[in-house]
Image (cartoon, rainbow, N blue to C red; front, side, top):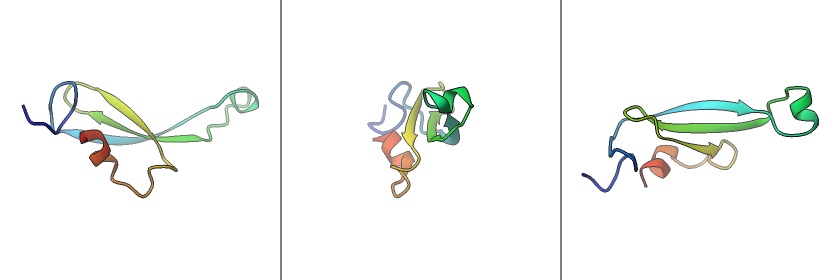
Length: 67
């Protein structure tokens, strides 16, 4: 098994999706989804990691997933 790849199964097949989530308090009450994340997930086993979209805008997210 390679030292790079999914930490659960070793697969090199990773994909990304953007998701938005509600916070707490009034944003939850009014369903305001201002928390934006990029999800990197393994297409083989489904293992997922969430990255803050604002914090990770300048970096290659797949590199973070593969280590």
